[in-house]
Image (cartoon, rainbow, N blue to C red; front, side):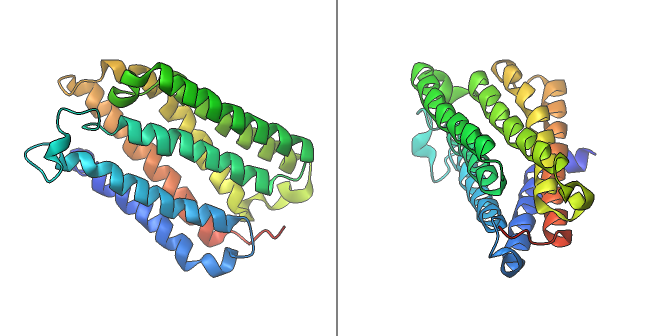
Length: 233
């Protein structure tokens, strides 16, 4: 287990890249469906993660050492903007594509727009925290958007004959994966202010959680992309 924890960064990046590559290889299968947007998102995720690793080159006289001592020496701002907000907005967009009920689509779109405005306001009012840690309320609102997406999706399939073949739907695998990810990861935002590398127990627990939930999510994506049948509009 220590080997996995010590190499968690490379392992998580590997499954993320593997999911993106799987999506690109199977792109032809999904190019006429809304799932093509999800494949683009997987590539976007890899870019976000790779760029987010810039902090490794800030310390120890790295090529980005000129950022040391500035607000950009940590990458909290990057992941808040492009993951917690960016990913939630994407899923709001994606589920508005796959939902059938027009009322649910409108509610979801309104929620996403409201989420964007509130998140921007929270960042502006918590600018120092934006660069030095997680903003818990943004994490909560992000999780609520995901919950809304998944709830609307499951509500629709329960009311249709899609429930009989849910295991052939990529959207089912996506929904289960993101629901578990956000439900498990969101509470960690409340502990970020107390995060310190000297607290070995918390560091270990946090590392284990990240490794398990992120690996599970992307493996679910890979399985879903392979076994699912295209769902045409």
